[in-house]
Image (tube, rainbow, N blue to C red; front, side, top):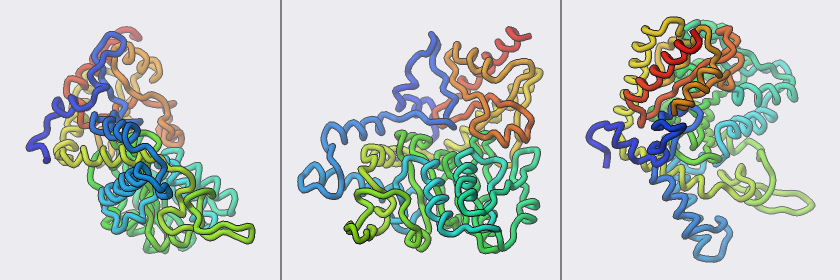
Amino acid sequence: MTRSHFDAEAIRADFPILQQEVNGHPLVYLDNAATTQKPEAVIEAISHYYRCDNANVHRGAHALSDRATVAFEQARERVAQFIGSPKASQLIWVRGTTEAINLVAQSWGRQQLKAGDRVLVSYLEHHSNIVPWQLVAAATGATVEPIPITVDGDIDLAAFDALLDERVKMVSVNHVSNALGTVNPVAEITRKAHAVGAKVMLDGAQATAHFPVDVVALDCDFYAFSGHKLFGPTGIGALWGRESLLEAMPPFLGGGEMIETVSFAGTTFNSLPFKFEAGTPNIAGAIGLAAAIDYLAGIDMNAAAEHELSLLEQSLELAKDVSGLRRIGNPAQSVGIFSFVLEGVHPSDLGMLLDQQGIAVRTGHHCTQPLMDYYQVPGTVRASYAMYNTAQDVERLFQGIHKAKRLFG
């Protein structure tokens, strides 16, 4: 049952790790863009699988395997439903968004790209949405070209339009920037890309924890996300793909489960989704991810998103009283990510000082070095908010920032 109103403190109580102290202080966890914490319901679902149902899936001839297979495939159906997939078979289990993008780059890209073709990615991208395309471009003769952004950290749609022509075969962009929090207009980007015949890959790693995603409404060709950024376990994620494209793509990995028949004369491959799922899958991870989605179904996610944005607004207001603090980016639409630099204080030094006070933030380039180069900074301090963060957490963050100002002058 959905909670009638949003209560961050009540949600916080569902997460065991948030009840501890770190370095003698109550934990303030503001590194949610890197990984979110896990509610008791997820921990219990994983524990139950290992305590009661642990077995390999699909081919066992015993009760444990039957139960594990049912739970595993029910998890696929639940996750597919979560993103609006017409069929569960269009959802491929992967280790996370990084593996999903590599799968598309290697399987679709090596088959489809050739010399003279172009792949467009933006300056906002995580390295995992740049490097895989560079690897396949080097193998095929295609080129990878950046889509410019504005100084506020939004994709420059006019510049994007100027880049589009029939040589563009793939546009691969993130739904939400992990470094700035920018929410990109991906439906419009997809429409423009399709108009010139290009396919579209969306990196949804930072999106699914903040607002509903409907792959049919977005009309993208591929969508990827990670469980561990969605209050689920690490080592599990999903790639959704348009069925016709997945059917035409060759397998990414070879081994068990992905085959139909094997002989030394040749091999035939399994049907979707198993063609792309070689080897024993992360069964517990899939079950844990489904449990995370079930947990989120009991929360008013629109209210949670509003709450997270209120924490960002609080941060921006408190930042006005800190001389030398500069927010990096000011996107038109954002999730609750506050990325900044503090004059005279290296981001790593500030991160360590905050950690001593029990405040966990991320520092560095956030695997977005081209973006940091664009802003001419070595890195930033990033506070990324989730539904279990509170106004008190933001106050603690700024108490730590003011302490740094006093120490570093």
